Length: 309
Length: 309
Image (tube, rainbow over all chains, first blue to last red; front, side, top):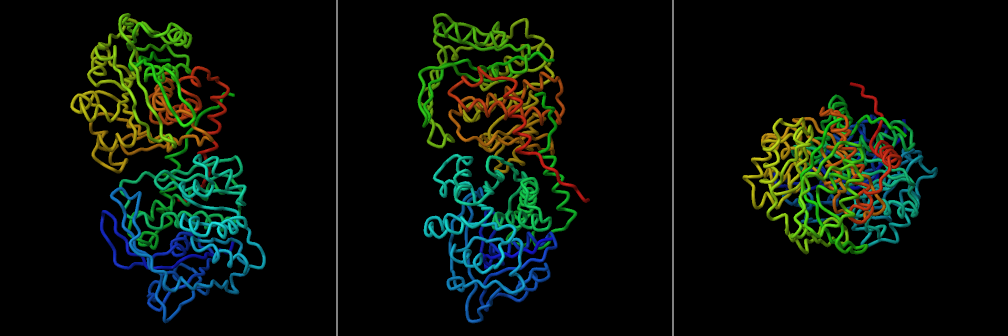
């Protein structure tokens, strides 16, 4: 079983959906990735930063999930990164109402001693310079490095982003970001161009329309589970990424065949994440219901056709 | 092997995509459905109407595909239905430039004697009154009746449409139409409501995002094959429907398990249809390449995960 290191935000979110709104609740990419990966009982650590206003109960909840917080810097006199957003009636688009970087503005990540030997590295959505700094601090290259990013960094720091992309194995981005990064509308062509930038594996997330996994000509598709109700999409992409790398780390197998299973686990966890506000659903997820839903994914996708040629 | 009767338009289309434009070429729902279903070597007939301007070579091409044209009325002094459309750069939206009903305006479908005993009936997109007339002319209810329709009939003839929907087994519509018909945004809820209107099976087409097959609580998903280039989406939905009902008719098996295979065949044929303008690709399709692509669908979707509970 591999050792997994995650770098990303740990944050406060305030979310408004057609179904309700929240006060400041626990959020952040590293939080969702960590909670999702925690379902595999891994040795997992988070590198991030929070302010003195970050509640002890959140720290304790993460520790209870067996997540090592040695790499979580607490800036006592600072305030935790805060994001606020409001979703459209169909939950497919959202407006950002506030982004207060706070302690994140001066964040200098430090890889703690006990994770210098990590086998799996997840670079959550953050400034590419922060992602690069983490890569550079790890003496022996991990078995697999996965990067998540977003259009904001493509708009503002494309050169730095491309430098990080050249160092990694797997990139996870959404369809619009894949088009922006590659300059190609066709996702098949976009994946080819992104391969040439470095990553051997390209995962393109399409929200309610599932996710595509590309590996130099091979392609696999994991649908999103059709749900009666999506309550809050916040964190679904990070939860997907956490399930993906968590499964790979738990099996220490980075073959394409195993990555297929990993994207199914990613979709599986994401389908839970959206059922409640924020991290609530992911804080309380049992092995039985995970297995039940895997069965649903099988029923949703598996068919038997005899090939005659 | 079942006998398949198709009612729908046989038309001229003029199409403009980012890749080029055509003069008047062969089009129409029944044409695409018929060509698609013809891959199964069925006893297939079309009910439709064309004008005196309709070329003999098109008629001959359809007959060469073993499609019976006894039910195709030719109004010598009339003109064939004409549709013209222009696609947006991403091919996901299109503007209709012209819709000249011509002989379609007074179309009274007549079920020919040799298809009164059809086992499979495909009601292509047409005025609901025309669809209902065909249902009413068939003395013994077919084994399976599939209906395709579109938002235009929901906007203008909802009551008549609902009357037809109450008589059929399978409805194929796109995601926006499913939402309009049901008044529900969630496709899972939309399918439930449409079930209550009559159809035991609801197929929701999502274009490049695949298709969902619902059957009272069970759901199956067929992805669209990720393609490097989509050349012309015209007829893809009808080609899907033709592959779906053609496969079912060729196996005479209308179980849910077999419908899963049928939607895969539908997606398979639709992936060919979009590779060239109009019907060109579907006029020249070989068994070998169909089988090759089925293999791609398997690779795209099939995975092995051991369930532990």
